[in-house]
Length: 536
Image (tube, rainbow, N blue to C red; front, side):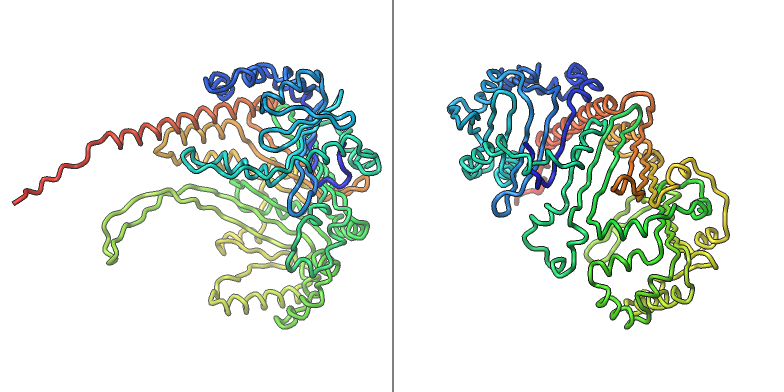
Protein backbone atom coordinates (compact mmCIF):
# COMPACT_ATOMS: atom_id res chain seq x y z
CA UNK A 1 0.00 0.00 0.00
CA UNK A 2 2.98 2.32 -0.63
CA UNK A 3 3.33 3.84 -4.13
CA UNK A 4 6.57 3.04 -5.93
CA UNK A 5 7.26 6.76 -6.47
CA UNK A 6 6.84 7.79 -2.82
CA UNK A 7 9.34 10.54 -1.97
CA UNK A 8 9.73 9.60 1.69
CA UNK A 9 8.76 6.48 3.62
CA UNK A 10 9.17 5.94 7.34
CA UNK A 11 8.49 2.65 9.12
CA UNK A 12 8.26 2.64 12.93
CA UNK A 13 8.57 -0.70 14.69
CA UNK A 14 6.35 0.14 17.66
CA UNK A 15 6.74 -3.34 19.19
CA UNK A 16 10.52 -3.12 19.23
CA UNK A 17 10.47 0.41 20.63
CA UNK A 18 7.83 -0.56 23.20
CA UNK A 19 10.18 -3.22 24.55
CA UNK A 20 12.74 -0.48 25.22
CA UNK A 21 10.38 2.17 26.58
CA UNK A 22 6.96 0.96 27.66
CA UNK A 23 3.81 3.10 27.72
CA UNK A 24 3.93 2.81 31.51
CA UNK A 25 7.35 4.50 31.38
CA UNK A 26 5.87 7.32 29.30
CA UNK A 27 2.95 7.68 31.71
CA UNK A 28 5.42 8.63 34.44
CA UNK A 29 6.67 11.68 32.54
CA UNK A 30 5.64 15.22 33.41
CA UNK A 31 4.38 16.06 29.94
CA UNK A 32 2.08 13.02 30.00
CA UNK A 33 0.72 13.87 33.46
CA UNK A 34 0.08 17.45 32.36
CA UNK A 35 -1.79 16.33 29.23
CA UNK A 36 -3.85 13.66 31.00
CA UNK A 37 -4.81 15.90 33.93
CA UNK A 38 -5.87 18.87 31.79
CA UNK A 39 -9.53 19.57 32.62
CA UNK A 40 -10.15 20.74 29.04
CA UNK A 41 -9.12 17.35 27.61
CA UNK A 42 -12.24 15.36 26.62
CA UNK A 43 -12.77 11.98 28.20
CA UNK A 44 -12.26 10.05 24.97
CA UNK A 45 -8.78 11.57 24.56
CA UNK A 46 -7.91 10.73 28.16
CA UNK A 47 -8.97 7.15 27.41
CA UNK A 48 -6.61 7.03 24.42
CA UNK A 49 -3.80 8.56 26.48
CA UNK A 50 -4.32 5.91 29.14
CA UNK A 51 -4.39 3.05 26.64
CA UNK A 52 -3.52 3.85 22.99
CA UNK A 53 -4.72 0.37 21.95
CA UNK A 54 -8.31 1.46 22.75
CA UNK A 55 -8.14 3.38 19.45
CA UNK A 56 -8.47 0.03 17.67
CA UNK A 57 -4.97 0.32 16.15
CA UNK A 58 -2.63 -2.67 16.35
CA UNK A 59 0.55 -0.81 17.26
CA UNK A 60 2.58 -4.01 17.54
CA UNK A 61 2.44 -4.30 13.75
CA UNK A 62 4.05 -0.90 13.32
CA UNK A 63 3.17 2.33 11.55
CA UNK A 64 4.04 3.60 8.08
CA UNK A 65 4.35 7.28 7.08
CA UNK A 66 4.98 8.40 3.50
CA UNK A 67 4.70 11.36 1.16
CA UNK A 68 3.83 11.31 -2.53
CA UNK A 69 3.59 14.10 -5.06
CA UNK A 70 0.01 15.28 -5.46
CA UNK A 71 -1.53 17.84 -7.79
CA UNK A 72 0.20 21.16 -8.41
CA UNK A 73 2.68 21.93 -5.63
CA UNK A 74 0.87 19.83 -3.02
CA UNK A 75 1.88 16.50 -1.54
CA UNK A 76 -0.14 13.66 -0.17
CA UNK A 77 0.88 12.82 3.40
CA UNK A 78 -0.18 9.37 4.54
CA UNK A 79 -0.21 7.32 7.75
CA UNK A 80 -0.94 3.59 7.46
CA UNK A 81 -1.19 0.70 9.87
CA UNK A 82 -3.08 -2.40 10.97
CA UNK A 83 -6.32 -2.73 12.92
CA UNK A 84 -6.98 -4.70 16.06
CA UNK A 85 -10.63 -3.66 16.41
CA UNK A 86 -12.57 -2.16 13.50
CA UNK A 87 -15.40 -1.08 15.84
CA UNK A 88 -13.07 0.78 18.24
CA UNK A 89 -11.27 2.43 15.34
CA UNK A 90 -14.51 3.74 13.87
CA UNK A 91 -15.59 5.18 17.21
CA UNK A 92 -12.14 6.69 17.77
CA UNK A 93 -12.33 8.65 14.51
CA UNK A 94 -15.98 9.70 14.98
CA UNK A 95 -14.89 11.46 18.17
CA UNK A 96 -13.03 14.04 16.08
CA UNK A 97 -16.27 15.19 14.49
CA UNK A 98 -19.49 13.41 15.61
CA UNK A 99 -21.44 15.16 12.83
CA UNK A 100 -19.64 13.14 10.12
CA UNK A 101 -20.99 9.81 8.93
CA UNK A 102 -19.16 6.79 7.53
CA UNK A 103 -19.63 6.10 3.83
CA UNK A 104 -18.54 3.05 1.91
CA UNK A 105 -16.78 2.67 -1.44
CA UNK A 106 -16.38 -1.00 -2.26
CA UNK A 107 -14.77 -2.68 0.73
CA UNK A 108 -13.35 0.60 2.10
CA UNK A 109 -15.02 2.65 4.83
CA UNK A 110 -14.39 6.39 4.52
CA UNK A 111 -14.77 9.22 7.01
CA UNK A 112 -14.01 12.90 6.44
CA UNK A 113 -12.36 14.43 9.48
CA UNK A 114 -12.98 17.90 10.84
CA UNK A 115 -9.88 19.36 9.16
CA UNK A 116 -10.99 18.04 5.73
CA UNK A 117 -8.55 15.13 5.84
CA UNK A 118 -9.82 11.61 5.21
CA UNK A 119 -9.43 8.27 6.95
CA UNK A 120 -10.24 4.97 5.29
CA UNK A 121 -10.21 1.39 6.58
CA UNK A 122 -11.24 -2.14 5.75
CA UNK A 123 -11.27 -5.18 8.01
CA UNK A 124 -7.49 -5.20 8.60
CA UNK A 125 -5.81 -1.91 7.62
CA UNK A 126 -6.32 1.84 7.92
CA UNK A 127 -5.08 4.85 5.92
CA UNK A 128 -5.07 8.52 6.94
CA UNK A 129 -4.65 10.80 3.92
CA UNK A 130 -3.76 14.47 4.25
CA UNK A 131 -2.94 17.28 1.87
CA UNK A 132 0.27 19.24 2.54
CA UNK A 133 -1.38 22.64 2.03
CA UNK A 134 -4.18 21.78 4.47
CA UNK A 135 -1.72 20.45 7.04
CA UNK A 136 0.42 23.60 6.74
CA UNK A 137 -2.67 25.74 7.22
CA UNK A 138 -3.61 23.86 10.38
CA UNK A 139 -0.10 24.11 11.81
CA UNK A 140 -0.10 27.85 11.09
CA UNK A 141 -3.45 28.22 12.84
CA UNK A 142 -2.24 26.35 15.92
CA UNK A 143 0.70 28.74 16.21
CA UNK A 144 -1.43 31.87 16.17
CA UNK A 145 -2.34 33.95 19.19
CA UNK A 146 -5.71 32.96 20.62
CA UNK A 147 -6.87 36.56 20.32
CA UNK A 148 -6.01 36.74 16.61
CA UNK A 149 -8.65 36.53 13.93
CA UNK A 150 -9.45 32.92 12.99
CA UNK A 151 -8.02 31.64 9.72
CA UNK A 152 -10.21 30.72 6.80
CA UNK A 153 -11.47 27.15 6.70
CA UNK A 154 -9.03 24.78 4.97
CA UNK A 155 -9.72 23.95 1.34
CA UNK A 156 -12.06 20.99 1.07
CA UNK A 157 -10.00 18.33 -0.75
CA UNK A 158 -11.96 15.49 0.80
CA UNK A 159 -13.24 14.16 -2.56
CA UNK A 160 -9.72 13.98 -3.99
CA UNK A 161 -8.32 12.49 -0.79
CA UNK A 162 -11.12 9.91 -0.63
CA UNK A 163 -10.37 8.74 -4.16
CA UNK A 164 -6.64 8.61 -3.35
CA UNK A 165 -7.33 6.64 -0.17
CA UNK A 166 -9.42 4.03 -2.00
CA UNK A 167 -6.71 3.76 -4.67
CA UNK A 168 -4.11 2.87 -2.02
CA UNK A 169 -6.19 -0.11 -0.87
CA UNK A 170 -6.24 -1.49 -4.41
CA UNK A 171 -2.67 -0.54 -5.37
CA UNK A 172 -1.19 -3.12 -7.73
CA UNK A 173 2.23 -4.62 -6.88
CA UNK A 174 3.82 -3.17 -10.03
CA UNK A 175 2.78 0.32 -8.90
CA UNK A 176 3.93 -0.13 -5.30
CA UNK A 177 7.18 -0.76 -3.45
CA UNK A 178 6.16 -4.39 -2.95
CA UNK A 179 8.56 -5.63 -5.64
CA UNK A 180 11.36 -3.19 -4.89
CA UNK A 181 14.27 -5.34 -3.70
CA UNK A 182 16.12 -2.38 -2.16
CA UNK A 183 13.08 -1.41 -0.08
CA UNK A 184 12.57 -5.03 0.97
CA UNK A 185 16.23 -5.19 2.02
CA UNK A 186 15.70 -2.06 4.13
CA UNK A 187 12.72 -3.53 6.00
CA UNK A 188 14.65 -6.75 6.57
CA UNK A 189 17.36 -4.83 8.43
CA UNK A 190 17.01 -5.18 12.20
CA UNK A 191 15.98 -1.74 13.40
CA UNK A 192 13.54 0.35 15.40
CA UNK A 193 13.09 2.85 12.56
CA UNK A 194 13.48 2.58 8.79
CA UNK A 195 13.63 5.55 6.43
CA UNK A 196 13.47 5.57 2.64
CA UNK A 197 14.32 8.69 0.62
CA UNK A 198 13.79 8.75 -3.15
CA UNK A 199 15.87 11.74 -4.26
CA UNK A 200 14.91 11.30 -7.91
CA UNK A 201 11.22 11.75 -7.07
CA UNK A 202 11.98 14.70 -4.78
CA UNK A 203 13.84 16.48 -7.58
CA UNK A 204 11.02 15.74 -10.03
CA UNK A 205 8.59 17.44 -7.65
CA UNK A 206 10.54 20.73 -7.76
CA UNK A 207 8.77 22.88 -10.39
CA UNK A 208 11.64 25.29 -11.06
CA UNK A 209 15.24 24.31 -10.43
CA UNK A 210 16.70 27.61 -11.64
CA UNK A 211 20.28 27.28 -12.89
CA UNK A 212 20.36 23.61 -11.88
CA UNK A 213 17.95 22.96 -14.72
CA UNK A 214 20.72 23.91 -17.16
CA UNK A 215 23.07 21.24 -15.83
CA UNK A 216 23.24 17.57 -16.73
CA UNK A 217 21.79 16.38 -13.44
CA UNK A 218 20.15 13.12 -14.58
CA UNK A 219 23.25 11.10 -13.76
CA UNK A 220 23.24 12.49 -10.20
CA UNK A 221 19.54 12.05 -9.43
CA UNK A 222 18.43 9.08 -11.54
CA UNK A 223 17.83 6.01 -9.34
CA UNK A 224 19.19 8.00 -6.41
CA UNK A 225 17.79 6.44 -3.23
CA UNK A 226 18.93 6.46 0.40
CA UNK A 227 17.89 3.83 2.95
CA UNK A 228 18.43 4.39 6.69
CA UNK A 229 18.08 2.01 9.63
CA UNK A 230 18.01 3.40 13.19
CA UNK A 231 18.61 1.30 16.29
CA UNK A 232 18.32 2.47 19.89
CA UNK A 233 20.99 0.40 21.63
CA UNK A 234 22.52 0.55 25.09
CA UNK A 235 24.46 3.81 25.35
CA UNK A 236 24.12 4.83 21.72
CA UNK A 237 21.89 5.53 18.76
CA UNK A 238 23.06 3.72 15.62
CA UNK A 239 22.21 4.90 12.12
CA UNK A 240 23.19 2.78 9.11
CA UNK A 241 22.80 4.13 5.59
CA UNK A 242 22.88 2.60 2.14
CA UNK A 243 23.00 4.94 -0.85
CA UNK A 244 22.07 3.85 -4.36
CA UNK A 245 22.77 5.82 -7.55
CA UNK A 246 22.64 5.53 -11.34
CA UNK A 247 25.10 3.14 -12.99
CA UNK A 248 27.04 6.07 -14.45
CA UNK A 249 27.48 7.82 -11.08
CA UNK A 250 28.08 4.54 -9.24
CA UNK A 251 30.88 3.53 -11.61
CA UNK A 252 32.50 6.95 -11.27
CA UNK A 253 32.37 7.01 -7.48
CA UNK A 254 33.55 3.42 -7.17
CA UNK A 255 36.63 4.37 -9.17
CA UNK A 256 37.31 7.41 -6.97
CA UNK A 257 36.33 6.43 -3.43
CA UNK A 258 38.74 3.58 -2.74
CA UNK A 259 41.11 5.44 -0.43
CA UNK A 260 41.41 5.37 3.35
CA UNK A 261 41.62 8.33 5.74
CA UNK A 262 45.27 9.30 6.30
CA UNK A 263 46.18 8.60 9.95
CA UNK A 264 49.31 10.76 9.84
CA UNK A 265 47.27 13.88 9.05
CA UNK A 266 45.36 13.35 12.29
CA UNK A 267 48.24 12.48 14.61
CA UNK A 268 50.13 15.63 13.54
CA UNK A 269 47.47 17.92 15.07
CA UNK A 270 49.42 19.90 17.71
CA UNK A 271 46.76 19.74 20.43
CA UNK A 272 45.28 17.23 22.85
CA UNK A 273 42.11 19.28 23.14
CA UNK A 274 40.55 18.32 19.78
CA UNK A 275 36.74 18.35 19.66
CA UNK A 276 36.03 17.80 15.94
CA UNK A 277 37.82 16.17 13.01
CA UNK A 278 36.68 15.61 9.42
CA UNK A 279 39.02 13.57 7.22
CA UNK A 280 38.50 12.27 3.68
CA UNK A 281 40.49 10.39 1.08
CA UNK A 282 39.56 10.40 -2.60
CA UNK A 283 41.52 9.89 -5.75
CA UNK A 284 42.96 13.13 -7.17
CA UNK A 285 40.59 14.66 -9.66
CA UNK A 286 37.35 13.36 -8.11
CA UNK A 287 35.75 16.82 -8.10
CA UNK A 288 36.79 17.43 -11.70
CA UNK A 289 35.30 14.07 -12.72
CA UNK A 290 32.00 15.09 -11.10
CA UNK A 291 32.09 18.48 -12.88
CA UNK A 292 32.55 16.67 -16.19
CA UNK A 293 29.60 14.43 -15.39
CA UNK A 294 27.51 17.56 -14.75
CA UNK A 295 28.66 19.02 -18.08
CA UNK A 296 30.12 22.22 -16.62
CA UNK A 297 33.82 21.43 -16.99
CA UNK A 298 34.17 23.47 -20.20
CA UNK A 299 32.76 26.69 -18.73
CA UNK A 300 34.69 26.34 -15.47
CA UNK A 301 37.92 25.52 -17.29
CA UNK A 302 37.61 28.72 -19.32
CA UNK A 303 37.15 30.75 -16.14
CA UNK A 304 40.03 28.93 -14.40
CA UNK A 305 42.40 29.68 -17.29
CA UNK A 306 41.60 33.36 -16.91
CA UNK A 307 42.74 33.00 -13.29
CA UNK A 308 46.02 31.35 -14.35
CA UNK A 309 45.34 27.62 -13.95
CA UNK A 310 43.29 24.84 -15.54
CA UNK A 311 41.01 22.10 -14.28
CA UNK A 312 43.84 19.71 -15.05
CA UNK A 313 45.99 21.65 -12.56
CA UNK A 314 43.15 21.45 -10.06
CA UNK A 315 42.99 17.70 -10.59
CA UNK A 316 46.73 17.18 -10.08
CA UNK A 317 47.30 19.70 -7.26
CA UNK A 318 46.47 17.37 -4.33
CA UNK A 319 46.89 13.68 -3.61
CA UNK A 320 43.25 13.40 -2.52
CA UNK A 321 43.77 13.51 1.25
CA UNK A 322 42.05 16.25 3.26
CA UNK A 323 41.55 17.02 6.95
CA UNK A 324 39.82 19.71 9.01
CA UNK A 325 40.37 19.80 12.77
CA UNK A 326 38.82 22.06 15.44
CA UNK A 327 40.52 22.30 18.83
CA UNK A 328 41.07 24.30 22.02
CA UNK A 329 37.51 25.52 22.43
CA UNK A 330 37.36 28.08 25.23
CA UNK A 331 34.90 30.60 26.61
CA UNK A 332 36.93 33.74 27.33
CA UNK A 333 35.73 36.78 29.25
CA UNK A 334 35.39 39.92 27.16
CA UNK A 335 33.85 43.36 27.58
CA UNK A 336 32.01 45.97 25.55
CA UNK A 337 31.14 49.64 25.89
CA UNK A 338 27.84 51.44 25.51
CA UNK A 339 27.96 54.66 23.52
CA UNK A 340 25.39 57.36 22.89
CA UNK A 341 24.51 58.80 19.48
CA UNK A 342 27.46 61.19 19.76
CA UNK A 343 29.94 58.40 20.37
CA UNK A 344 30.42 59.16 24.06
CA UNK A 345 30.93 56.18 26.36
CA UNK A 346 28.00 55.87 28.75
CA UNK A 347 28.55 52.41 30.20
CA UNK A 348 30.17 49.01 29.83
CA UNK A 349 29.38 45.33 30.15
CA UNK A 350 30.94 41.88 30.15
CA UNK A 351 30.21 38.72 28.18
CA UNK A 352 31.80 35.36 27.42
CA UNK A 353 33.24 34.99 23.94
CA UNK A 354 33.88 31.57 22.31
CA UNK A 355 37.33 30.96 20.85
CA UNK A 356 38.83 27.99 19.05
CA UNK A 357 41.64 26.93 16.74
CA UNK A 358 41.32 25.25 13.37
CA UNK A 359 43.64 23.52 10.93
CA UNK A 360 42.72 22.69 7.35
CA UNK A 361 45.20 20.56 5.46
CA UNK A 362 45.44 18.87 2.06
CA UNK A 363 48.04 16.46 0.79
CA UNK A 364 50.19 17.82 -2.05
CA UNK A 365 50.19 16.09 -5.43
CA UNK A 366 51.85 18.19 -8.13
CA UNK A 367 53.44 21.20 -6.45
CA UNK A 368 53.64 23.32 -9.63
CA UNK A 369 49.91 22.93 -10.22
CA UNK A 370 49.21 23.74 -6.59
CA UNK A 371 51.28 26.93 -6.79
CA UNK A 372 49.18 28.10 -9.75
CA UNK A 373 45.99 27.69 -7.71
CA UNK A 374 47.53 29.42 -4.68
CA UNK A 375 48.62 32.30 -6.92
CA UNK A 376 45.08 32.64 -8.27
CA UNK A 377 43.74 32.66 -4.71
CA UNK A 378 46.13 35.41 -3.68
CA UNK A 379 45.18 37.48 -6.70
CA UNK A 380 41.50 37.09 -5.90
CA UNK A 381 41.97 38.00 -2.22
CA UNK A 382 43.97 41.10 -3.21
CA UNK A 383 41.18 42.19 -5.54
CA UNK A 384 38.80 41.81 -2.61
CA UNK A 385 41.03 44.08 -0.52
CA UNK A 386 41.96 41.29 1.89
CA UNK A 387 45.62 40.52 1.38
CA UNK A 388 45.77 38.31 4.46
CA UNK A 389 42.84 36.14 3.37
CA UNK A 390 45.02 33.60 1.57
CA UNK A 391 48.21 32.80 3.47
CA UNK A 392 49.58 29.31 3.20
CA UNK A 393 52.10 27.16 5.01
CA UNK A 394 53.44 24.07 3.31
CA UNK A 395 56.17 21.50 3.20
CA UNK A 396 56.87 18.82 0.60
CA UNK A 397 53.88 16.72 1.70
CA UNK A 398 51.11 19.04 2.83
CA UNK A 399 49.52 22.45 2.55
CA UNK A 400 48.02 23.79 5.78
CA UNK A 401 45.81 26.73 6.77
CA UNK A 402 45.06 27.83 10.30
CA UNK A 403 43.69 30.77 12.24
CA UNK A 404 47.27 31.31 13.49
CA UNK A 405 50.43 30.83 11.37
CA UNK A 406 52.28 29.29 14.34
CA UNK A 407 49.71 26.53 14.68
CA UNK A 408 50.03 25.63 10.99
CA UNK A 409 53.83 25.52 11.33
CA UNK A 410 53.58 23.26 14.37
CA UNK A 411 51.27 20.97 12.42
CA UNK A 412 53.64 20.75 9.44
CA UNK A 413 56.62 20.13 11.75
CA UNK A 414 55.00 16.85 12.78
CA UNK A 415 53.67 15.53 16.07
CA UNK A 416 52.72 12.24 17.61
CA UNK A 417 49.34 13.03 19.12
CA UNK A 418 47.18 10.09 20.13
CA UNK A 419 43.39 10.20 20.27
CA UNK A 420 40.81 7.61 21.31
CA UNK A 421 38.74 8.31 18.20
CA UNK A 422 41.47 7.85 15.54
CA UNK A 423 40.97 4.13 15.01
CA UNK A 424 37.20 4.63 14.89
CA UNK A 425 37.16 7.06 11.94
CA UNK A 426 40.06 5.69 9.89
CA UNK A 427 39.91 2.72 7.55
CA UNK A 428 37.21 4.38 5.43
CA UNK A 429 37.19 7.09 2.72
CA UNK A 430 35.29 9.46 5.05
CA UNK A 431 35.56 9.90 8.82
CA UNK A 432 33.97 12.45 11.16
CA UNK A 433 34.27 12.86 14.93
CA UNK A 434 32.51 15.48 17.09
CA UNK A 435 32.93 15.58 20.88
CA UNK A 436 29.71 17.13 22.20
CA UNK A 437 30.70 16.49 25.81
CA UNK A 438 33.91 18.49 25.48
CA UNK A 439 32.03 21.49 24.03
CA UNK A 440 29.26 21.30 26.63
CA UNK A 441 31.83 21.00 29.41
CA UNK A 442 33.45 24.26 28.34
CA UNK A 443 30.08 25.99 27.93
CA UNK A 444 29.15 24.91 31.45
CA UNK A 445 32.09 26.92 32.85
CA UNK A 446 30.31 30.06 31.66
CA UNK A 447 27.17 30.18 33.78
CA UNK A 448 24.05 32.06 32.71
CA UNK A 449 22.03 34.33 34.97
CA UNK A 450 19.08 32.04 34.31
CA UNK A 451 19.18 28.96 36.55
CA UNK A 452 16.90 27.04 34.15
CA UNK A 453 19.31 27.63 31.26
CA UNK A 454 22.15 26.31 33.42
CA UNK A 455 20.07 23.28 34.39
CA UNK A 456 19.32 22.54 30.70
CA UNK A 457 23.03 22.70 29.93
CA UNK A 458 23.76 20.33 32.81
CA UNK A 459 21.19 17.87 31.45
CA UNK A 460 22.92 17.96 28.07
CA UNK A 461 26.27 17.40 29.75
CA UNK A 462 24.92 14.29 31.49
CA UNK A 463 23.38 13.00 28.25
CA UNK A 464 25.52 13.60 25.15
CA UNK A 465 29.02 12.21 24.62
CA UNK A 466 30.12 12.21 20.97
CA UNK A 467 29.21 11.23 17.42
CA UNK A 468 31.34 9.11 15.09
CA UNK A 469 30.50 8.87 11.37
CA UNK A 470 32.25 6.80 8.72
CA UNK A 471 31.32 6.28 5.08
CA UNK A 472 32.27 6.00 1.45
CA UNK A 473 32.64 2.22 1.27
CA UNK A 474 30.87 0.26 -1.48
CA UNK A 475 29.15 -3.01 -0.62
CA UNK A 476 26.34 -5.06 -2.19
CA UNK A 477 25.60 -2.44 -4.83
CA UNK A 478 25.37 0.47 -2.38
CA UNK A 479 27.57 3.13 -0.83
CA UNK A 480 27.48 2.68 2.92
CA UNK A 481 27.78 4.99 5.90
CA UNK A 482 27.41 4.53 9.65
CA UNK A 483 26.77 7.04 12.43
CA UNK A 484 26.98 6.32 16.16
CA UNK A 485 25.58 8.93 18.54
CA UNK A 486 27.22 7.92 21.81
CA UNK A 487 25.73 8.83 25.19
CA UNK A 488 27.50 9.35 28.51
CA UNK A 489 25.63 6.45 30.12
CA UNK A 490 26.85 3.49 28.09
CA UNK A 491 24.81 0.86 29.96
CA UNK A 492 21.20 2.12 29.71
CA UNK A 493 19.18 1.85 26.50
CA UNK A 494 19.34 5.10 24.53
CA UNK A 495 15.57 5.27 23.95
CA UNK A 496 14.95 5.04 27.68
CA UNK A 497 17.55 7.77 28.20
CA UNK A 498 15.88 9.95 25.57
CA UNK A 499 12.55 9.55 27.31
CA UNK A 500 14.06 10.73 30.59
CA UNK A 501 16.02 13.55 28.92
CA UNK A 502 12.96 14.92 27.10
CA UNK A 503 10.97 14.78 30.34
CA UNK A 504 13.66 16.72 32.24
CA UNK A 505 13.88 19.33 29.48
CA UNK A 506 10.07 19.65 29.49
CA UNK A 507 10.05 20.30 33.24
CA UNK A 508 12.78 22.93 32.89
CA UNK A 509 10.95 24.59 29.98
CA UNK A 510 7.77 24.75 32.08
CA UNK A 511 9.71 26.23 34.99
CA UNK A 512 11.27 28.80 32.68
CA UNK A 513 7.84 29.70 31.30
CA UNK A 514 6.43 30.10 34.81
CA UNK A 515 9.41 32.24 35.86
CA UNK A 516 8.96 34.48 32.84
CA UNK A 517 5.26 34.84 33.62
CA UNK A 518 6.02 35.80 37.22
CA UNK A 519 8.53 38.45 36.13
CA UNK A 520 5.99 39.88 33.71
CA UNK A 521 3.33 39.90 36.44
CA UNK A 522 5.72 41.63 38.87
CA UNK A 523 6.44 44.34 36.32
CA UNK A 524 2.71 44.94 35.86
CA UNK A 525 2.14 45.17 39.61
CA UNK A 526 5.00 47.62 40.16
CA UNK A 527 3.49 51.10 40.63
CA UNK A 528 4.52 53.74 38.09
CA UNK A 529 7.05 56.39 39.18
CA UNK A 530 5.50 59.43 40.90
CA UNK A 531 5.90 62.72 39.08
CA UNK A 532 7.42 65.05 41.64
CA UNK A 533 7.42 68.16 39.43
CA UNK A 534 5.48 70.87 41.21
CA UNK A 535 2.68 72.59 39.36
CA UNK A 536 2.95 76.36 39.54
